[in-house]
Length: 284
Ligand SMILES: C[S@@+](CC[C@H](N)C(=O)[O-])C[C@H]1O[C@@H](n2cnc3c(N)ncnc32)[C@H](O)[C@@H]1O
Image 1 (cartoon, helix red, strand yellow):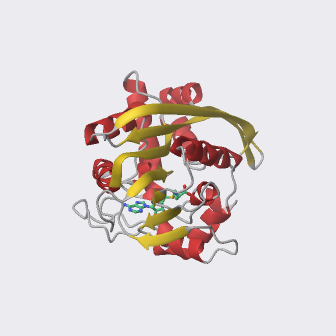
Image 2 (image 1 turned 90 degrees about the vertical axis):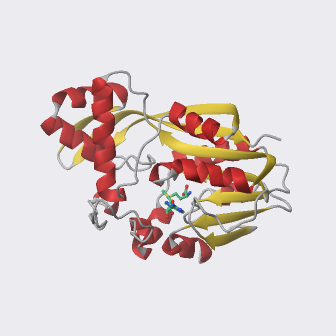
């Protein structure tokens, strides 16, 4: 079994009233951070290029990469800059360290440690901002998008890239969504929550952004295991559990997302996941 498929119960669930920022996610573990950076994914590479397109860069922009991690998405964005630069902010020093010590340094990339809902920058200082594969980790997503609005210049663009789940259409969808979030929270902590395309749009609109574009991209797969599929790996745990506990949810998981067939030590998966690229603009 690869490291990606192991359960990691390192997160301390603690007490219900503990909402301090000092609880540690697995991104704070240097070994996990290094493994995270080594994972390859054609889907993610493609999405990163599409995110860079949506940023509509001239090459001289000051860009905020919120929850930058190891800089995996900052890297292709940086290739489109001439005189501009990217500032990556993350709460996990272990992730920043991997990016900082990379054998192939990212051009025009600077890092800062900080919380996504309280970044250490002056108001109106960035031309662009993006957040990739991180919105679903934030306990306070409304606070985060408001904070980005503060540091963006008027007319500045903010691009959100995140896996999205189906809009719930009935009570079975709602129960499945609850189950999916429960399983992911075991690994990623209680703040974890998948969004839908419209919940991200609502988040941005409520904060005061104009939304000129939303792009929903679905990627089909038909392969052994979930390697290479961003956020794919815990979906198999969801499948295993609903199969045992709730056949109705298993049916719906198959209909909405993917089917799975076990043989020997392997599992064949076939289906598709969607990712949202949503562009918000700070009004002039
Ligand atoms: C799945 S990684 C994505 C990293 C990078 N954006 C990418 O696309 O490869 C999620 C990152 O969000 C960071 N993160 C989660 N919550 C955060 C918060 N409240 N403030 C700052 N960083 C946060 C984690 O430390 C982690 O590095």
